[in-house]
Image (cartoon, rainbow, N blue to C red; front, side, top):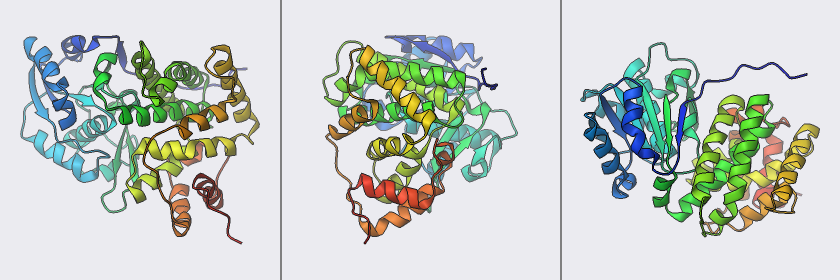
Length: 382
């Protein structure tokens, strides 16, 4: 028997090398003739903004550029983007960049169309008025935000990540062009790649998984697993960028239909407390959470299935969790030194994270304490 489910809508995906050239067609398809292009200075420097602007303006589409996106956007970042946008005349929004550009663009859409502040929309479906049509163009293979209806925005005071979701926030079209991910620095590619892998793995065992989300998760895993070794070794070859970008977007669709778990719940407090990049925080916690989840029979069965995929495709003969731990162990990224006195605070914060409630094994604060102690090789108190 197949369990009943209701799927979330997804954007139209335009995938392929050179797909950015289809931008003007996508904008016309959503019915607008002027756009706000939301991006960051790094994307401007890489030349992607001028290319996108040229494609749009050559088709008679007017473009306003907002390039002040910050990493890990806060409520005030969203408000600044909205304030700048209020002074302009446009009919739709284009996000060009990584997850921060996507989140800022979606947050701006909330505020422009519905007013208030981002904390008003913490949760799902709290916006009553229509949104502006939105096109998403990821330049990194990681967050899958281009396929999700959530804007992740941090509270100014506590740095808590708020998931502000609404079906109207979803992109109408997502353009997936592997060529434009070539400009991302290798450390960024590594961290976003591990995050994308974590998305596929956490969504696959989420308590809200469905037949549809399971298909997205497995397809995402197959694509990511083919390329992630090269990404981690900084030896990108051939179709690696295409596999990673498509895998990240499919992971985003899996999340949209099933949510995440304790690896993300425990990673977010690390980002807030130590200002560590999200992908690095997730990488630290993922193998330990998977070991914890292995005690759940259904999760263990799914992990065995993914281990078989690794073996059948010739990627690795290691069991899935060992393969993940090996990937994380090879990351050449700055270490985080967690003080034993921080563990209780981190665990208390992790227990409040929304994603943790969808983990296959329920967790209490003491479980998060054990996970953090394992991740940072801290002895248990006597």
